[in-house]
Amino acid sequence: GRDISEKKALLWALRESEKRFRDLVEKLREIVFEIDGDARIRYISPNVKALTGYEPEELLGGPLGDLPLDVKNDRSLNRTLRLETKDGRTLHFRASGSKTEVRGVFKGFKGTLTDITETMRTAERERFLSTVLMGISDSVIVTNASFRITDVNPATHKNTGYSAGELIGATPGILFKDFFNKDSFTKFLSDIKRRLIHTREGRLCKKDGTVVMSEVKISSLVTEEGAVYAYVGIIRDISAYKEREKQLFEYSYHDNLTGLYNRRYCESRTPEFDRPQHLPLGVIVVDINGLKLMNDVFGHRQGDELIRTTARILSESAGKQDLVCRTGGDEFEIITPGTSEEKLEKFTQRIHKRARGTAVGSIQVSFAAGYALKRSPEQDLELVRQEAENNMYGNKIEFADLLKNQMIHLMLKDLNRISNREYTHGKRVSQYCEIIGRTLKLEDKEVANLRILGEIHDIGKIKLSGDILNKPARLTPDECEEVKKHPVTGYQIVKSVDEFTSLAEGILYHHERWDGRGYPKGLSGKMIPLQSRIIAVADAYEAMTSNRSWARRKNREEAVAEMRRHSGSQFDPEILDTFIRILT
Image (cartoon, rainbow, N blue to C red; front, side):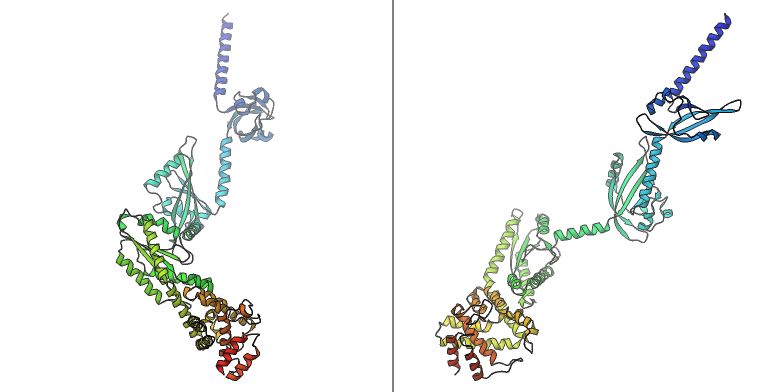
């Protein structure tokens, strides 16, 4: 009976030991296995199901993943292997174990499998990232949690001038001075805490002292427990982008033609000026005179030069605190803080004086100016602007014809400077026109207009070059075509002045012919205005009896004979007969 009791006790103890072993094995994170000499599974712990989806019984007799047969040659087992899960995934394990032998004969291995799938994936990701980061042109800097640099990519040396040896162990402060202040560092910590990429712009100081604007993106590397163990910073040179951004800003707030600020900028700055400390606040509105005339007659290139010249006069006359803007095609605005009506008046007098001493081609620079003053905070600045604009228009209307009249006389003066013959020609044609008008018994006003017309009929030649006007030989066909444009140019000039509007058509058609073969319109007979028919006769006679380098000067009899031959074709027969009677 005693032997039986001892056997039962021993059996119970053995079962308890096995139970404790099974419980221990099942609670282990590692999988416990035993394989035979052919690397076939003899035993595998139940926890294999949680990882692979297989029951232990399904794996018995099969291979242990991709463990090779030559493992029998290993003194101890220390290999990585792959196991396929029931749902087709691949897991990576570290197999560790020792040989089992019976009387010196190899029987297999016993050991454990440790799941290293995540470790392998992390390593693979790190290798991939390392390959990518080492190959990119941006600088990559890795620091530890204490912000000491532990690694850099090759591009960092090229971009900063510092070698890896000079950077490793230092802080990023070697590259960025004052990168963080209290507020920005708080923002950095907040982003890192929320696992966000922290982005900042800063001035990177290269080893040679060069400073470049850079964008820095900082991310953190954390342990499974969430503790930061490293920071990765990617640094990109954005100086070219910043330059383009600056150019776009300049473009959006500056006038390309003059370099002044534009209306948009003026409106954006207005609230800054519209404050009590800037009172009294002056607004001056300036509008260029004759810009349309300049564009129509001389082209937009000359018109642009007139705008630029006006802008220069205004900006050079303004004070440092004044804001000068081009607010429209021919309009400018100056906002001047802490001023007075007397100062505004002196400013307008100053810019007018400078304009009187400045010309663009044949046009003297002139403009209308009006100003208004905001004296109290209650005044609406927009109404003050309107008052300044109204004052400017009043000034423009008052002097418009006078200024345009002056422009015409300046053009004539400039034309005569370029070609002295034009001055003599105009004076003589004027005299002949007056005589013809009186002989035809025209009214005094019409005779007076003829006298003016004779003097200014070739004003359109102001657009011609001195080389053409003074050419000592006959003109080429192309040059002749240029000359033929002068009646239209003269018409545009004279029509811009109300005082001379009635003379415009006389200038436009003074090269028409009685037979309709003239220019610019090809009018014939009495469709041609009387003024033009009279000028045509006087102009031709004066030209034939004057010194011309390309043709012999004719005497009176020769000129009269020549003109008679063209009576009824080039000239109005009645007017020509009248003129010949005067001459003879």
